[in-house]
Length: 224
Image 1 (tube, one colour):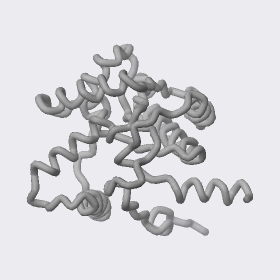
Image 2 (tube, rainbow, N blue to C red; image 1 turned 90 degrees about the vertical axis):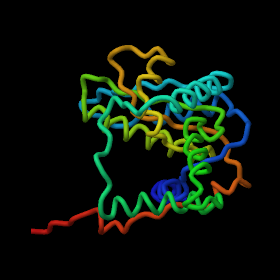
Image 3 (cartoon, helix red, strand yellow; image 1 turned 30 degrees about the vertical axis):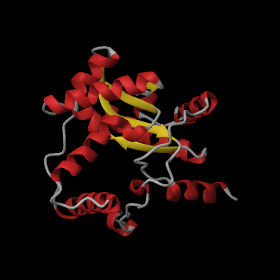
Image 4 (cartoon, rainbow, N blue to C red; image 1 turned 180 degrees about the horizontal axis):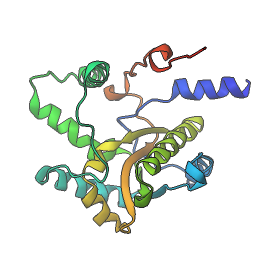
């Protein structure tokens, strides 16, 4: 398989896993994922990301603390949240939500079940590992953009090794608690988390795949 074909296969096969097996990853694979992602391009080669990787008991303690915090606190993030979703962005967001709840057999009116599923975000969907990605405060928007590229490459590297992931901005909505739990330095801002592990192939939440828009919807070609 050519390099181009292999990369295309990785891009097409990556998906967001929402249920994991209770099986930790080999340490060597974890290091390999982050070594590959470290090659990510960044503004002036600043490489503003710094990742805090939790495993085993640390993951469970972090998840339990987050769930307790979310139940009693309003969201407060380091980075600006989306103001609203309109047009095609609203449609895509709603479609992904509909697919998830349909896979679980949760009706729109079942608010308790929907709330319980929402809390699964903060339990990392049962993943044995979670990485919290932070950016340098002084690099502002472009530092966060660089971290976005890094997050994508972490997930693609994991996919190439047969590891399932999901990016989780939900965790960043409670940045203060994340900062306190991880004892982050003042110059770090929480971007998102990435959950890692082997997927549970029998869980219904893993039975669907979100769609992608046509490339021509995203690219404008100027020829003259």
